[in-house]
Image (tube, rainbow, N blue to C red; front, side, top):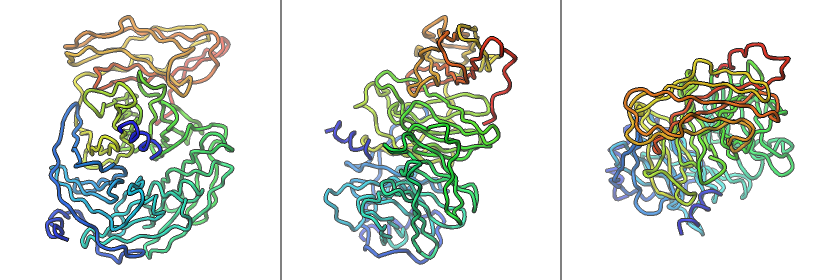
Length: 489
């Protein structure tokens, strides 16, 4: 049964007066959009919680299939419950209000990937109904805006800078837009660039981006830009093929992209007009970790690793990676992952939904692991094919559990070493109380192609990984001038 549910996840007013007491977030009363479906059935729950390694998780009652989540300014979150189907409102104290939609589906489970607060309501994608659903939380009334095609599969939702609501239609090659007056427009995306849009991001009123996961004809995925006022998508760097890009967000001077068919997130640098890949720590039971969604908070780049069962953050100011296990004990095989598919940032917390484990939880961004790894003094290195270099890393803090040394790079989509060889003088630190150093030899085989690579050296106690990124440029003997500063992130 659990395996069947995981496969599904990969593919995919009695208490009203009491509920109103919890509606403390600021929402403006505005006319609702779309066709009125009726009243939601409201239920209240007090959820038990578990805590480990910077993670807090709330266990949902029954099989809810939580997916799609939005963090509000008051510290609470709204998320979809695919198996209800409906929406739920969860507070950090564990109080949850469930709003079951007045719909009847066969099967009863829909797909809800997008949830946002907009225009006075809580909005969600409803794939089975091929519609965008609005919940008025003050009256528990449910409305819907139907899409033009039954196979549209409304996916992620993005609030536009001009007060509009945008969403992707995964299976019919369209982007949708709803304005403040409830007018629906749909825009066909170019199928020669893939035709499977996954997420939209806006810089301002005239500059937007979306990622396209690609199709059998186009090959791999792409990043495109568009003006929402004059829709005509333009390809960004067609020479670089993304691996099933599933999410994007702007960062300093560029765009971050999660690649859902790899073990790396990608950064497109506007200044250099080039891509940089950042690998994740390897896992033993699958070749790829599958980054899914990505979001930024200043210099921090957060993303979830679907197969690795991790929530991860890149500290771009120091080129460091921290990965948090979302289960204790950590997953050791694919059937043990929790299917943490979506997440949202808010009020010092990184909230996530776990589809098949039936938890909603968060990583506390103020939590600091008990051990850290430093960058070596020469983190930008240059080698000839056949060359090698020794690097010294300092490990500080405390750990009573052994710290295992791991390596990854960007030679291939798995992140596993092939023609770049990394070896430490120890395979693990038995215990840490203060400071230790490890010596890592980096070697480039003679058959390694010339170019730029990102390397990762990680220490892990199982629940938390701490890693340092390095930049490696492999050049011919005639081109051995000092390596310049790595592109700014």
